[in-house]
Amino acid sequence: MPTDHSAPRLRPAHADDVDALAARSGELGYPSDPAQLAGRLATLLAAPEQHFVCVVEVNGTVCGWIHGLVRPRLESDTRVEIGGLVVGAAWRGQGLGAALLEAGEQWARAASAASPCAAPNTAATRTASTCARATATSRPS
Image (cartoon, rainbow, N blue to C red; front, side, top):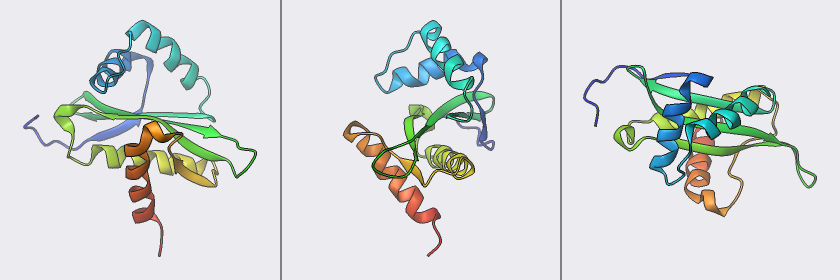
């Protein structure tokens, strides 16, 4: 675990992040070739009204990322889904995932999504649970 406790910094992802994004993805069992990921990232970054890709850095190292995407739906209002949320093992337990979720929720509200935080399927159960807790605690009573 890193010992320097400098403040984490959230920022939009950019093309130079592909190696770090691929490394973090690989930690969760989604091995990604940086060249392939670069193409995917370029597609997402080219549509900022539909996709949100944010990284969290500590001491200049990308420790995690979130991808949110707008999903228009027939049966319900448009929502923002979490396409992916990763925090590197060395940085877990420090609130970085919660910070990424909050950034995604802020983006969703700005994008006027009726449901600002949703996981797309049962494979994202942990993310959905985390998201539900983050959403519940951030909503006014």
